[in-house]
Length: 167
Image (cartoon, rainbow, N blue to C red; front, side, top):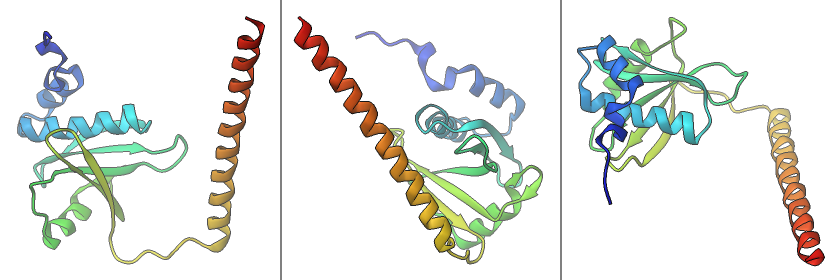
Protein backbone atom coordinates (compact mmCIF):
# COMPACT_ATOMS: atom_id res chain seq x y z
CA UNK A 1 0.00 0.00 0.00
CA UNK A 2 1.49 3.33 -0.99
CA UNK A 3 1.11 6.46 1.06
CA UNK A 4 0.98 9.97 -0.26
CA UNK A 5 2.58 12.49 2.08
CA UNK A 6 0.47 15.26 0.53
CA UNK A 7 -2.66 13.67 2.07
CA UNK A 8 -1.42 14.16 5.63
CA UNK A 9 -3.41 16.71 7.68
CA UNK A 10 -0.32 18.86 8.23
CA UNK A 11 -0.17 19.43 4.47
CA UNK A 12 -3.79 20.60 4.21
CA UNK A 13 -3.96 24.15 2.78
CA UNK A 14 -6.17 25.41 5.64
CA UNK A 15 -3.65 24.20 8.21
CA UNK A 16 -0.71 25.64 6.26
CA UNK A 17 -2.51 29.01 6.03
CA UNK A 18 -3.32 28.89 9.76
CA UNK A 19 0.33 28.26 10.67
CA UNK A 20 1.45 31.09 8.38
CA UNK A 21 -1.09 33.43 10.01
CA UNK A 22 -0.10 32.34 13.55
CA UNK A 23 3.63 31.50 13.41
CA UNK A 24 3.93 31.28 17.22
CA UNK A 25 1.48 28.38 17.33
CA UNK A 26 3.11 25.00 17.96
CA UNK A 27 2.69 22.84 14.83
CA UNK A 28 1.79 19.66 16.75
CA UNK A 29 -0.88 21.50 18.74
CA UNK A 30 -2.21 23.08 15.53
CA UNK A 31 -2.33 19.69 13.80
CA UNK A 32 -4.30 18.18 16.69
CA UNK A 33 -6.69 21.16 16.62
CA UNK A 34 -7.06 20.72 12.88
CA UNK A 35 -8.10 17.08 13.37
CA UNK A 36 -10.82 18.31 15.75
CA UNK A 37 -11.77 20.96 13.16
CA UNK A 38 -12.13 18.20 10.54
CA UNK A 39 -14.20 16.06 12.93
CA UNK A 40 -16.58 18.94 13.63
CA UNK A 41 -16.83 19.97 9.98
CA UNK A 42 -16.82 16.67 8.11
CA UNK A 43 -18.17 14.16 10.63
CA UNK A 44 -20.48 16.18 12.88
CA UNK A 45 -21.63 18.56 10.12
CA UNK A 46 -20.97 21.83 11.92
CA UNK A 47 -21.56 25.11 10.09
CA UNK A 48 -19.25 28.10 9.65
CA UNK A 49 -16.34 26.47 11.43
CA UNK A 50 -13.07 28.32 11.70
CA UNK A 51 -9.82 27.79 13.54
CA UNK A 52 -8.48 30.76 15.43
CA UNK A 53 -5.70 31.35 17.93
CA UNK A 54 -5.46 32.78 21.44
CA UNK A 55 -2.05 34.36 22.09
CA UNK A 56 -2.85 34.50 25.83
CA UNK A 57 -3.44 30.73 25.96
CA UNK A 58 -0.83 30.04 23.27
CA UNK A 59 -3.17 27.56 21.59
CA UNK A 60 -5.72 27.33 18.79
CA UNK A 61 -9.44 26.86 19.24
CA UNK A 62 -12.39 26.37 16.93
CA UNK A 63 -15.53 28.43 16.47
CA UNK A 64 -18.63 27.08 14.80
CA UNK A 65 -22.31 26.24 14.92
CA UNK A 66 -23.58 22.72 15.58
CA UNK A 67 -26.77 23.69 13.71
CA UNK A 68 -27.17 26.24 10.97
CA UNK A 69 -29.09 28.97 12.78
CA UNK A 70 -27.77 28.71 16.33
CA UNK A 71 -25.23 30.84 18.15
CA UNK A 72 -21.56 30.12 17.52
CA UNK A 73 -19.71 28.05 20.11
CA UNK A 74 -16.09 27.62 21.06
CA UNK A 75 -14.32 24.27 21.07
CA UNK A 76 -10.91 24.01 22.69
CA UNK A 77 -8.81 21.01 21.62
CA UNK A 78 -6.71 19.46 24.40
CA UNK A 79 -4.63 16.31 24.34
CA UNK A 80 -5.64 13.32 26.42
CA UNK A 81 -2.19 13.52 28.03
CA UNK A 82 -2.71 17.12 29.22
CA UNK A 83 -3.68 17.95 32.79
CA UNK A 84 -6.09 20.88 32.90
CA UNK A 85 -6.24 22.77 36.18
CA UNK A 86 -9.15 24.86 37.47
CA UNK A 87 -6.96 27.95 36.97
CA UNK A 88 -6.48 27.03 33.30
CA UNK A 89 -10.23 26.55 32.93
CA UNK A 90 -10.80 30.07 34.27
CA UNK A 91 -8.29 31.32 31.70
CA UNK A 92 -10.18 29.49 28.96
CA UNK A 93 -13.32 31.41 29.88
CA UNK A 94 -11.41 34.71 29.91
CA UNK A 95 -9.36 34.35 26.74
CA UNK A 96 -11.51 32.30 24.36
CA UNK A 97 -13.74 34.75 22.54
CA UNK A 98 -16.85 34.28 20.42
CA UNK A 99 -17.64 37.38 18.39
CA UNK A 100 -15.12 39.35 20.50
CA UNK A 101 -16.97 38.46 23.73
CA UNK A 102 -15.86 36.16 26.58
CA UNK A 103 -17.78 32.91 26.70
CA UNK A 104 -20.11 31.40 29.30
CA UNK A 105 -19.55 27.82 28.12
CA UNK A 106 -16.87 25.99 26.18
CA UNK A 107 -16.55 22.51 24.78
CA UNK A 108 -13.29 20.72 25.48
CA UNK A 109 -12.34 18.38 22.65
CA UNK A 110 -10.13 15.82 24.35
CA UNK A 111 -8.24 14.05 21.59
CA UNK A 112 -5.97 11.05 21.33
CA UNK A 113 -3.13 10.84 18.80
CA UNK A 114 -5.16 8.31 16.77
CA UNK A 115 -7.72 11.15 16.17
CA UNK A 116 -10.29 9.81 18.65
CA UNK A 117 -12.13 12.81 20.11
CA UNK A 118 -14.41 13.03 23.15
CA UNK A 119 -16.30 16.27 23.78
CA UNK A 120 -17.05 17.73 27.23
CA UNK A 121 -19.12 20.87 27.66
CA UNK A 122 -18.00 23.14 30.51
CA UNK A 123 -19.90 26.10 31.92
CA UNK A 124 -18.75 29.10 33.88
CA UNK A 125 -20.83 28.77 37.02
CA UNK A 126 -24.10 26.87 37.27
CA UNK A 127 -26.58 26.74 34.42
CA UNK A 128 -30.29 26.33 35.09
CA UNK A 129 -31.91 23.25 33.54
CA UNK A 130 -34.10 23.57 30.47
CA UNK A 131 -37.76 24.26 31.10
CA UNK A 132 -40.13 21.27 30.94
CA UNK A 133 -41.69 22.76 27.79
CA UNK A 134 -38.29 22.83 26.06
CA UNK A 135 -37.58 19.23 27.09
CA UNK A 136 -40.92 18.16 25.59
CA UNK A 137 -40.21 20.15 22.41
CA UNK A 138 -36.76 18.57 22.03
CA UNK A 139 -38.21 15.09 22.55
CA UNK A 140 -41.01 15.76 20.05
CA UNK A 141 -38.46 16.95 17.46
CA UNK A 142 -36.30 13.88 18.07
CA UNK A 143 -39.30 11.55 17.75
CA UNK A 144 -40.32 13.26 14.49
CA UNK A 145 -36.82 12.80 13.03
CA UNK A 146 -36.81 9.12 14.01
CA UNK A 147 -40.25 8.59 12.46
CA UNK A 148 -39.13 10.33 9.26
CA UNK A 149 -36.06 8.07 9.04
CA UNK A 150 -38.19 4.96 9.64
CA UNK A 151 -40.62 6.01 6.91
CA UNK A 152 -37.74 6.65 4.51
CA UNK A 153 -36.21 3.24 5.22
CA UNK A 154 -39.60 1.53 4.83
CA UNK A 155 -40.08 3.25 1.46
CA UNK A 156 -36.60 2.17 0.32
CA UNK A 157 -37.31 -1.43 1.36
CA UNK A 158 -40.67 -1.34 -0.43
CA UNK A 159 -39.05 -0.09 -3.66
CA UNK A 160 -36.30 -2.70 -3.41
CA UNK A 161 -38.89 -5.45 -2.91
CA UNK A 162 -40.85 -4.22 -5.94
CA UNK A 163 -37.68 -4.23 -8.06
CA UNK A 164 -36.83 -7.72 -6.81
CA UNK A 165 -40.34 -9.04 -7.51
CA UNK A 166 -40.35 -7.60 -11.05
CA UNK A 167 -37.11 -9.46 -11.93
